[in-house]
Length: 214
Image (cartoon, rainbow, N blue to C red; front, side):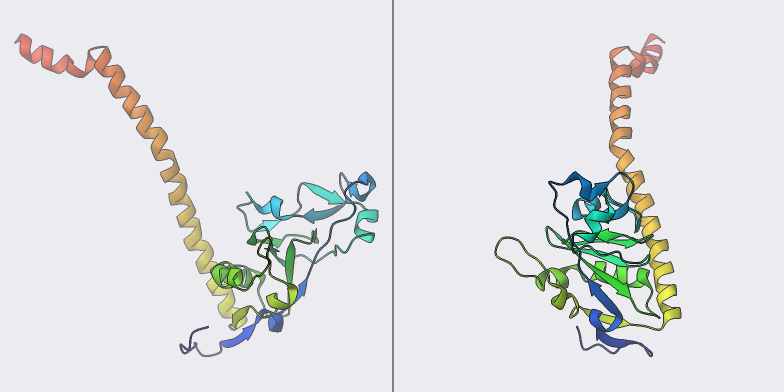
């Protein structure tokens, strides 16, 4: 981290100082009894690939009691910050309820005084740093021990809440603007078609003809 002076009450530390880091697991996929239609919520990186919200309740599949028992997957409490640790590093969500994950995650169970939302946005901000901390010959992965070393800036809880509220408000405006911009191409296409239609049926030059006739 930089040597800039931190605000009063802020402390330079690491993720291992403010959260317990937990991994996940996958039961034997060839045994359908390890999965359930409605069992223990189980999240994989694929579930977050198109996920745009902050809080997640469950993924595309649940684990059965057997699947949870026979794998290294662990149930983590609501408020746990989930981060994909490989393929790719950096997908993020917050558990809306107790969930488990596969081995492609490092989950952060926040300690008292640490707001999950603050951790979530901090990890989002630190994406490049986290990727650089990864290693691997086949694909980049960050280990649990390295996750504990991710730099973190702890601020007083009341300030964490204010920061999260401010970020959420600004991002809501950004998302609203993005949605409006996403509609622009369709509006332009309709306008182009309307202009061409008017040109082809004479409406575009109707005023000129009336003036010329006079």
